[in-house]
Image (cartoon, rainbow, N blue to C red; front, side, top):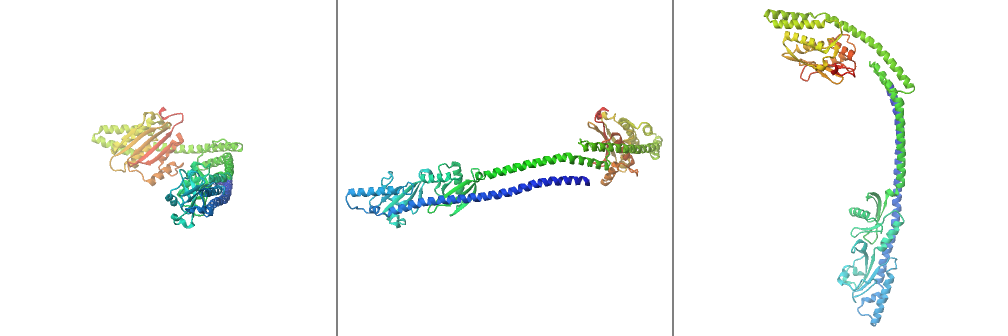
Length: 585
């Protein structure tokens, strides 16, 4: 066993070393890949943040330029003349001034590169001058009610039709008291130019930029995916955005994104951009998958190689050692029944030849020992138990004195049949039916004498022709009567039952006597299984067990167990030939 463990340990060490190297390589690559991915993510976040900062500055510059231009128009002297109710000159000069103002605001509406609608409202003269033809007067209460400092966003009929609005007033302190405003410059800007700038930004990189306001909603580029936009808005609505800038790792539309946002100065809007990390990291992911595939293939090849070595070397050596250990434990029928190759085939043949020679020699010795035991048994059989005979004769005398002729005849007949069978020294085997007949004689004799028990016999007719050693049941029945029933108070029952399977016949003898203790039962079974019984302890049962094993082999033999209802159960198992069923006897 020590040599086998050494071999197994050596093989295991080699296998563990190979697997350990592969695992170490995978761990190293995983750490390296994790560091690489983190570095790439940081670089992506930094680059995206810088690009978003540049776009933010451009947007803020545009909005600031438009708001400054609106404030300058509110302070333009020519436009300020609309504050007065009466204009100097004739109506022609009045129209000339209005045309001049219209030309000026028309020029200013596109000066920043984004097209804006500029409308001048004079609350004193109720005049309106606008670059758009959609303005035909105004409602004063509605106009002053919409004056607020800073940029405002009007969503319109839909998000795509929304406009950004800036109000410039004169005097400049009219923001606190809109009713005091004499002149209002309203600058309105649609989202088309803003979306075009987002399109240009998107075309230069991997992102998908958009503007988001918690109050006003979302403005995306022209090619933004609707489902993606809905997921982004739902996610942004669910979190609290910082005033500055931040990077977020989010799951949108089933993909992993790195989202960056920055707040636009002077507006209640956030510039948001997100980059699909999986798409950016696809080269790294492909390389990782390729490495894992290569490692898995290498692991499989290693396992296949280890399996081949195991089958070709380790298994034959283990089988050889196992059979050697079997012979060492006394199993001289151990044979190597596997096909070897090369040196192992030669070694297996020589081992089997050696084991067969050892078994043959030991069986001869064993048979001689059994014959010696058989001679002793026959000698014991030839010596009638005086005590048993005296009891029977004494019973006959008493019953004859009492005039019980039937009892005398029954005892004489059973006693004669019993001793005629037990003292026969001819053939060593008999039919099971003959053995059962003498058991009936014995039980009737004991029952006539003591009237202490009854018996039940249930043996299938198909088993009665089974060829068994002579006097194989009598020691078992005698053991039940003497050691199980006689020490018990009251009436008892002995049961003899036959069972059969395809190639196994069993005879089960049970009684409800005093039984046997657990420790005594283990000691008895151990003694029965022993190959030798030098002290002749429980000789009758030991001899029965050895004779069954010698004649039937295999798993045949005698076993003893405790009866759950009290008493003892003895099972005799006969393993018949594979080509013969129990029912064929």
